[in-house]
Picture 1 (cartoon, rainbow over the protein chains, first blue to last red):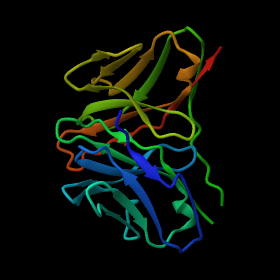
Picture 2 (picture 1 turned 30 degrees about the horizontal axis):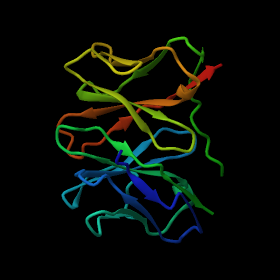
Picture 3 (picture 1 turned 180 degrees about the horizontal axis):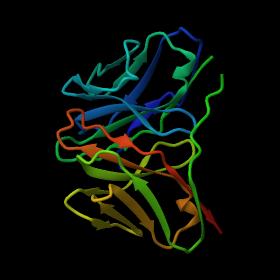
Picture 4 (picture 1 turned 60 degrees about the vertical axis):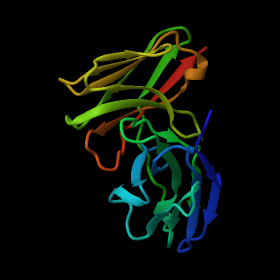
Length: 114
Length: 114
């Protein structure tokens, strides 16, 4: 069964450093997403991406965040200057497109900012 | 400092019993609802979905009920098994939402006693 894959599974970084989280969405999907989950809390929407541009973003997704689809298979989330409060599990997801809103999630990248 | 997570409501059931997990959603304009299961250290896993033109939908051992009048969603799991132990999240989507994003609820922890 096709699945969303994320790398790395764990990332430790120093405050102020840049990190790039990587995702390979399901191959025929058109919508891509990043969500995050702080330990013990609910899953929060960050950004959605369609047709090579951001279609919606939350208040969390400020100027420190950016997303990119550098080629036909990868989808990345960059945090330019990490803060302690960016520590969370980051989930990538994808969905097939209009008429099918079912999101498929990857296993996540646990980001720890020290 | 250390972040304090939400205290998740917990449902404890005996193996073989039926489980009912409830969710109150927030947006009366939402027209698509979905239940996810999240096991420790993993991403949300799709269980079942329902559109607002339905009030009940059945899957394998699971049933979702939708009451739009009171904005309430429930997930029923028949003959609960130890492998059903996880945190369950409901999520909602609103038609015309440009980003096709899902908004997640707070989650319920299901514990199945053998």
